[in-house]
Amino acid sequence: MIKALIIIAIILGFYLLHRLCLWLEANGWIYYINKKAENGTLGSTLQELNALLNPSVRHTIEMKQNQVVVRRNEAGSPEELMSTDEGKKYDLIASGFAEMRDSFSTEQKYIDLLIDHLKPNANILDVGCGSGFPIASYLIEHGFQVTGVDSSKKLLKIAEDKCPLMQPIFGDIRSVGINQKFDAIVEWWCLFHLPKEDHAKMIARFASWLKKGGILEFTTGDSEYQESSSTMLNQELNFYSLNPDIYEKYLKDNGFKLLLRESDQEQHLVWLAKRDLK
Ligand SMILES: C[S@@+](CC[C@H](N)C(=O)[O-])C[C@H]1O[C@@H](n2cnc3c(N)ncnc32)[C@H](O)[C@@H]1O
Image 1 (tube, rainbow, N blue to C red):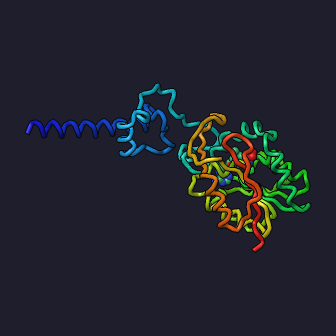
Image 2: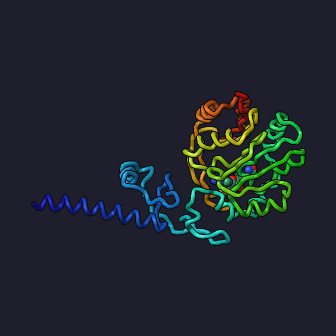
């Protein structure tokens, strides 16, 4: 009898410890060493068990200043920060981001490659255009008509000044209605903000926005990953990529012919594909 009570007490003790850990984690007092809790995630029993069995992900008491801080500024409420639409987070850092993103790094070579495939005056959709600078503005300088779609109102507002000839569309690229067909689409550093399950849908959407024979240029990671980082102006942002072979399959499934798959910098791939004529 006493043995049974001791066992029940131990189990109850573990359960209470588990709940306490979740509560501490939710309040930012502890987190996993290698597995930082995502926004809005309280963890799960399986993770807790894993944490007990595998020391590399054990809960660790940390000083409170290491917790994720809810940023206070123009854009809004903590609920907005938990959205999977990273555009709202870009609202929080819009002016800093626009200032930082004032010149090309590796892109120019690839934008020129895209241009080589286009007729003068072609119309181009810039997906996740940000402030329109430097990509949309470069394309406009080259005589193209550019429409930019982005879910950061603040970046689109900056684009009105910096890149006034770009036609802006505000919206989440996964759901926004775009009833126009383009000669080309350029997407640079935007797809990687969408959860992995949205990537197949986006390749299909790109195909639906292109004219037959249209060109798609987009960027991804060079391997499958999922992480969150606050290295960009201290804003916690999510990053995802699939295995590159999966993008090749999605392209094929959507009638694209692959023209280029090249690494322009560490962990990053640039893709160029043509929507087949069939
Ligand atoms: C790293 S910035 C890149 C901006 C621009 N393409 C460039 O090369 O400078 C990512 C952009 O994607 C936008 N974005 C992220 N998620 C989005 C979504 N679901 N729908 C529309 N835009 C999104 C952000 O607002 C931001 O402007």
